[in-house]
Image 1 (cartoon, rainbow, N blue to C red):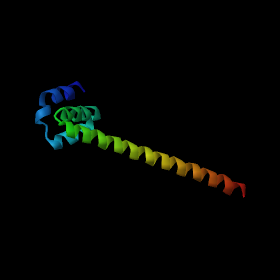
Image 2: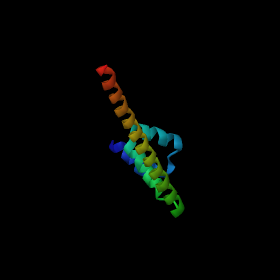
Image 3: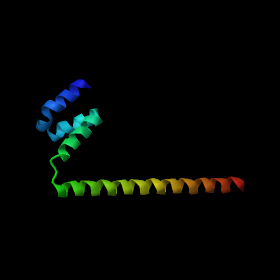
Amino acid sequence: MIDKWAYFLKYASDTTPEELTNISRECPVIGYAYDVLNRCNYSKEEILEYYRYNTRADEIATSLSDAREAGLKKDRKRRVIFQAR
């Protein structure tokens, strides 16, 4: 793991997108570090768009999770009714 961090610190600016994909797959923490480093170069508009996008993605994930839970709850009720017959 230390070798991967050393590589990151030494070659972050020279890493190709393909290498980044492989690194992120092997070590998600270092992939996240690349993302943070990349965001350091964002303009104010890009930062706002980034946060809007992530906020919306979180809202969608929450909605999906809530809908799934509601569906499971409804299914459990149906099973109880069906078994009672």
